[in-house]
Length: 355
Ligand code: SAH
Image (cartoon, rainbow, N blue to C red; front, side, top):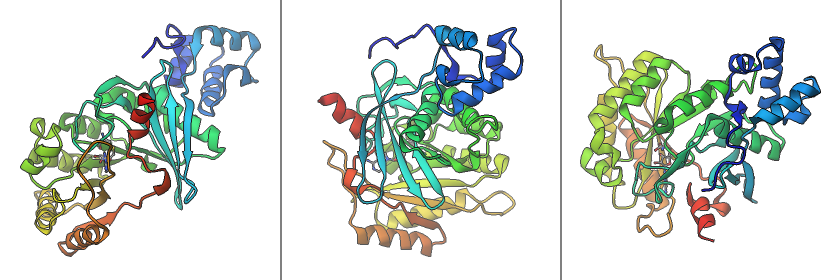
């Protein structure tokens, strides 16, 4: 990690219009809105043609626009999915994945360089956490992908490298920036945030009332099994996590989705499916007996270099899904996009660092 280029300059892409206005001092009020709109469209200072050139020069002298550079790009010849390796101002890299769905163009973004959560099956956490991403760098992932694909991104999933709730402030700032009506204006209803289950932060997020979809990486149906693959479970065991999920739904009215990575021989038995169904149905029932809708996303494990864990075969995956459904839990198997450029999230970055 080298020093960030222009590290002493103001990180303007992380700023809301009111903050830009304050920074500009005596400029007319509408200038801040104009600049914010330009920034949200991926423009550099030079391109801000309705801003007087003296002000553009002043901005260029004092501020920096922290959009990552595309270092590598893998395009699937099967479904057009694109994996980006993005280089940040200090030379470190994160990944983003662009996917085309019927409901819109979706970008999976990273929130941290590395991760300190230590999930045993995950490539992103192998070398620990290097640093958080700024709000501008997360937003910059969206801008870089839009500029490269010449399309508009309408959906975002925070399921790339990092634990978004471990970088809480910048994640929330990013969510507010990307959904700002004068900016990208992406509806938060089209944004998912995935967490391994940092319980106090789930309560904090609920208080903010952002209409995002919260995804919980559950991956096991009891504390023993979960503790073996997710160290976070010793700090926040399943009961505490489920309590936070219930609260989240009660406060926000937004349904929670659960992710369950299927690992062969570890969490893919019918007993595990039954226990999972029982856990979710019990936990998601409120005191007055009303039950929240529960949805489980099954993710067959992506093999990570140097890790012995593997995915169950297709039949087992489908049988697990049917078993959950027969127990009253709605479950779907995540479609695998870009199988020809497959690299479990975080692997592209590791491989790049090794070459
Ligand atoms: N830190 C967040 C985002 C992580 S990535 C979280 O824990 O939710 C998004 C999802 O992919 C998580 O559910 C994560 O557990 C899962 N995942 C990570 N590595 C995987 C792998 N090798 N195969 C399948 N799913 C994986």
